[in-house]
Image 1 (cartoon, rainbow, N blue to C red):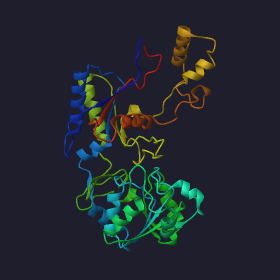
Image 2 (tube, rainbow, N blue to C red; image 1 turned 90 degrees about the vertical axis):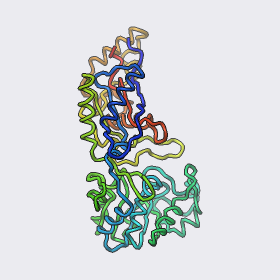
Image 3 (spheres, rainbow, N blue to C red; image 1 turned 45 degrees about the vertical axis):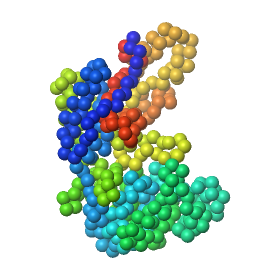
Image 4 (cartoon, helix red, strand yellow; image 1 turned 135 degrees about the vertical axis):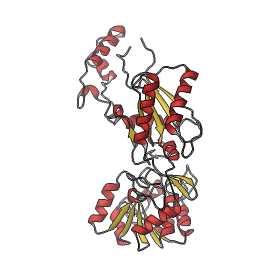
Length: 394
């Protein structure tokens, strides 16, 4: 009997730079790891490549000036409301610098007590004791009087102060407003740039329906500006700070990459190996309450074998109910047979209760993101074996 289920390996690669042949690097690194670690490839193994190195290799960059130009083209008034940006130096500060460079005034509306992905902007215990509630509109003066210059415990930064200084450094005026109702911005401006990620379509529609002239970040840099990079599907969403004047965009060539890597691995190994590009894995820090979900999707590209949902029975439920009178080897064999005979679609059946109803690429992306991390592990490729196995697979 096989004694090990899913195995996840972080695969070290050379440092990847612009114009590198990423498909070759991925495949060569996997073959080197095979020789080093002594594993064998199997059908339905998974190779996952972090979106960061995909974007780097394809040279998908834009500058602060590119952002300024596109925002100015879309908002010639040069006076806009910026709605619900995430509070992140890595994810949003360079975008905000570009917006400010192209505008004369920004009214920045922030949700509270945290942004969309859980970055806090105030002390929630102070909020609970104050005159304000989640339905309030709080001015910048009221924010300062009530919450002071609140410092985030993880970053050591007050993002209101940080964003104010950044905007003003670009000779742009700024006014802060705090509200959880996006329509509040219409009391200040009807030219609006929405910056939320996962609710972007709804937000844009609501404001348009209320008479605003609206674009979202997903509609900025969808086409090149003066030969820049772009992302036709997500615009600036999913971008990361590269330098103080440059952003790396979410990758746009992932579909071709995953197909090419799969083809090369079939040729080399004879095995049908699934391949995906992954970004943020959609998990939540239990202390800081921050969601690791700042990318517009977890997987922007994947091969066909990764489409769908898990179809698993809950072992504990079966053991405690259907086979409550069995133990030991008899119990194991009964459960294995139950797995072999399970329906091809278990949706809605009690036997699945407690399993995770998420798409495969979201689940696998979380596993990959936790494995690769965002620091100095040097493993932008993840190799997974046994993910689709179950107890009945000997």
